[in-house]
Length: 396
Image (cartoon, rainbow, N blue to C red):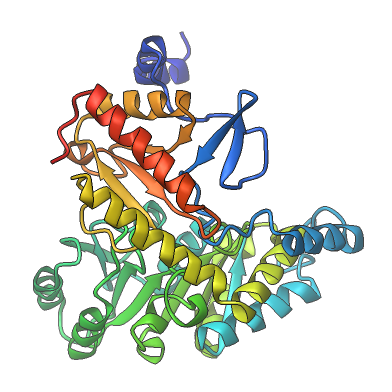
């Protein structure tokens, strides 16, 4: 047998779960990403999407994508560095910089590539990266690519962060990286305290606002805006694949930092630039976000309504305070069974298991969109409640 197969054939967990009929990944959707999607020809309520503002199927966003494709073609056939910069790429960067309150922005092909490209580029041997233990996988991978020392601190625990900062030699370069809103737990980073410690220990702060853009802050300008700390946070990262209804990523900072990244950040220099349609769709979504705050306000109405309903029924939603609501199951197989049963009953939710969360913290991730109706939320929660009872999952 070849060496590759020897290494990979022992991994049989997906086959085991498939044989039991509970495999919950790679489910085929046959429609646009709205509040209702088609799965196997059936209408299913979508509570597993990151389209927080419900703009992925907004007519203006779709039309912008069509027009860009007609004008610029399907792709850019190269990297931003060489032949792949369009006028609309620069327009979006300038618009985002203004929206986020920073001097400049650099776009990447995905949000994941932002963290792969920025973190190792700005840190070197002898430096320190301090990250919340619950940061997104892309931040962990970005830190792995760096020659700097990586220190993890306990989730949203400022005492733990300070202990780690004290371990860094005086005068060393320190980068603190946190999620703006944590993608599985749904809580907001304690940014005021992070900034206070950063100033005391002369550290640089980076927030990944992938799940915060469009959701919190002035018109959805993210976590630094939410706390009034835009000037104190040196790096604001994010993605277009959630509230901005497209694909791609960005980093916002001062002019000098963006200039440095433009000429050193490998995941940007050696990747093809985002497609014209993706860029135009993100621009159209940004137009909507900036000019009309009603989507975001409706999202918050839905969030408060759903959180109250779930808590009233005795569900454990952890420390969530945003449209990302973890409903804890704390049982690996039951998390899969629950997800599968709910899909059969017409509710699409995401199962979250290790390594995304600790093995004992498995959950279903219930995420809201501005476009959900109260009736849809009620129906989904009612079905979740019944399935919890069916599977005898303790939730009080």
